[in-house]
Length: 487
Image (cartoon, rainbow, N blue to C red; front, top):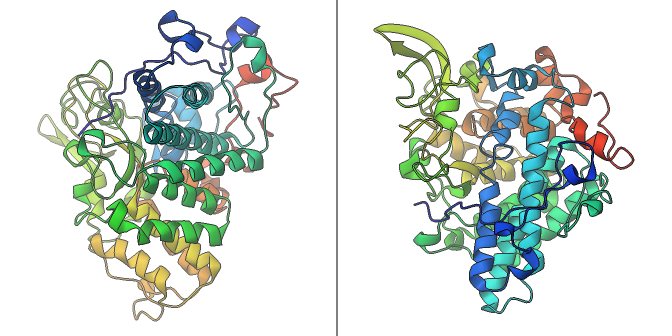
């Protein structure tokens, strides 16, 4: 059930990319035009402030659009097949993006707006008279969310400004240059450790969707994996699995049971961004965004089909025969006016919107299958063991998909894994089809240093591993914000 009403209750102070004068550098609009220092006084005020942090995840530059654009469209999973879907999206797709491509500034701004909202709660909550355990929980939620946003930023841009305090006036913004990725990761890890220590394993049904201890542990495991800290990643991801009695996480019996509005916040879901159709702009756009242009009402009954995330031919062929996940994830044709039209499209977020761009589908950020595959990756990097625990984890995922297991001495060469290198490729393949269209593929390829090898034919060059810093950020503060190489 949708329990976190995403009401933007707080106007955030954020790093912007519009204009070059100091007045445009920061948005200083306080809550309801009040002075924020006089607003945060009660537990209810802090609840509203926390809601604003969650609400930022819905922004166009976060999980409403940018994460799937970066995570799938920039990879070999999806593409823009119709130029009417958007020139900037095409630029991201074919690696012709520049520092003035709008996706870069939209993504940057939205994440810093959310970070500012988190900083407001973290800074303002301490003197508020409220129940200590609730205060600690709110702090944990805000730190988890701040860590998630910084994790996205550092993976997309590399070195980024590290802002952990409320910016109160335009001049302060000029003090923040690009901090090293190592320093940003230190803050991400500290925030996630703090969140893990103060968050509960679960919430009552009425509060489903909030960040949990398991979410903090799972994200921390992914952070360690991204940093190639294999032992720490294995320890943390194993803890998520070992604590399953408390976290309640498990694989859903069927792959189809994971997705759709009726399945939201299920037992496989660790953290998902909440959307609610018919609620003043709280709905999600994915049903419309992913439907082919020109499909009329054949794919989505309400609103415009936008063709913005179309599965590639290689994505279609990535599925093995009889893989139960394929029909849940994508289709290759639709019927329009009695005629069959051959066209790939995503169906993982299908449904009937209440209006254009107003569906009830959440966006899953972390789920248990991801944890199992990440743990398998960490174990394999620590040392290949023929038919060892990493094989068991991989095969749990394959078995649910209706596929035969892979083993060390399998008689079928297609199901045989005889080395650490082969296991890496088997995991890469399994993650691609298991997590298809969930915003992971690009980040997986970059994390494993495979992006250039896989995407060179698509036009990727070495510098494309990072997105360009918005040019307006460089123009505003050139002494502190330097462009990424190659742009």
